[in-house]
Amino acid sequence: MITHPPVTVQLVHPHPLEREAVACWLSGQSYLELIGKCDSLDKIDGLKCLSDPEVVIAFACKNDNTACQIHDLKRRCPPLKILIAIDTACAVKVRGILYAGADGLIDVYEEIQEWEWAIRSVAAGKIYYGQEMMRHLAGYFQTPEIKEACIASHPLSKRELEVLRLVASEYSTNRIADKLFISSKTVESHRRNLFQKLGVKNSVGLTKVAVGLGII
Image (cartoon, rainbow, N blue to C red; front, side, top):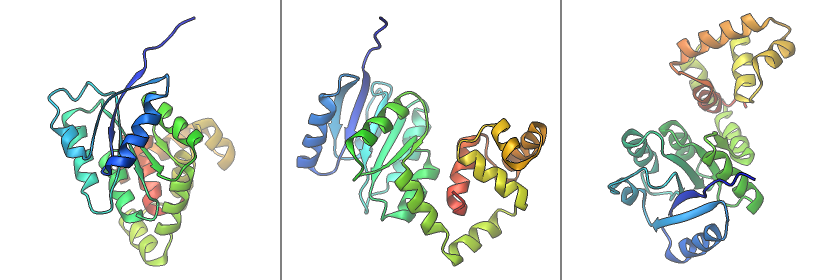
């Protein structure tokens, strides 16, 4: 039986008592190794060796500059994976975090099982956005004024919007083709057009735009 070494984790939480409680839970997970804890992402940025933690789990505050901190961390150490926990009520702040390059977003009030799934997904190099988080964001960005502004800044055809929604919903090329009754080559053509129009390089970038447009 092949055993894998535990994933090294750095915890960031602004409140001492809650930080200790979360640290205790993380330390009890056999697949994780908690190697540090602090109260701010700025202190992570100050580490001499950012590659020590494989995953940073950070609880965002309403008044901090989480998005800027994530951007700086990703610039210094692109392989570093960052899972952000935040109250979904802070929809505007969540959008900034999303665009800054967070690998995962989870509602602070999610169940333990969802937390485990989020951590495992991010540690495995996958992008994780909690369903509750996505629903809340979609609801926020579907207000008439915001949605109109988003669509105006990204002029897409009806078919391109359909493809974008399905790509962001993790449909494969063949599944999108079946759903829309078009060929796989046509799907790939739409995908390339979306990359060019939206200025993104991959499906993760398309998902971020889809959230901003409120179509998922």
